[in-house]
Structure formats: structure tokens, C-alpha cells
Image 1 (cartoon, rainbow, N blue to C red):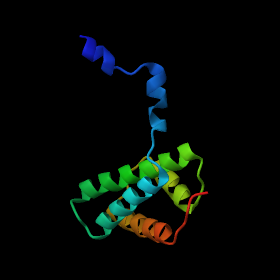
Image 2: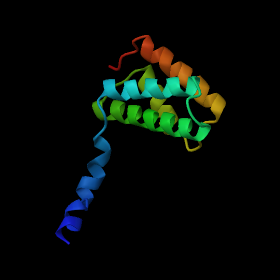
Image 3: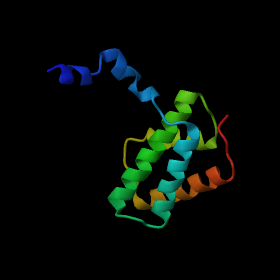
Image 4: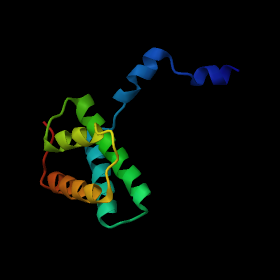
Length: 109
């Protein structure tokens, strides 16, 4: 019984959970890996969608929590805020854009 009680999050802890974002370098590396997987079709469409969506969400969170601003952060925030899933063509375009922005050294400020 004690173990179960220790695993529960207090409301204040739960509201702060989103702030535990990855540092920007790790989040951008994960986004690059996901984008490359999409471009090389390294998995099923659904798997790639999940990988890219999670990476973009983490990148957006990293930018928000750190107070960073850049074209990469703007793109991640825009995509993370959408209510519908990206189709394969959008995933490919987004992946190409992410790789271009991240490889150009578009650093967050």
C-alpha cells in the first residue's frame, strides 16, 4: 500500500510535469532522427507519424520551457499545436524543413 501511495503525483507535481522537457540539443537531435526516419521511410506510416509527432512535441516543449525562439521553435510550436495528424506528404515536407533548419545551424535564441 505504501508503494502505491508513493507513485501518485500531487496536483502541483502533475501541473509541473510538462516543464521536464529535454534540453534543446537533445530535443533537436531527436527531431533530426525522426525526420531522417520519415525521409528514408524507416517504418510504417503510423510508426513514423508517432515518432515525428513525439519529437516535434518534445522540441516545442524544450523551446517553451527554455524561453528559446527561432524558426525551428516556431515550426515545432505550429505543428505541435495542430489538432489533426499530418498526412504522409506533410510529414515528408515537415521533415525536410526540420532537417534544413537544424543543419543550417538555426540556433534557438
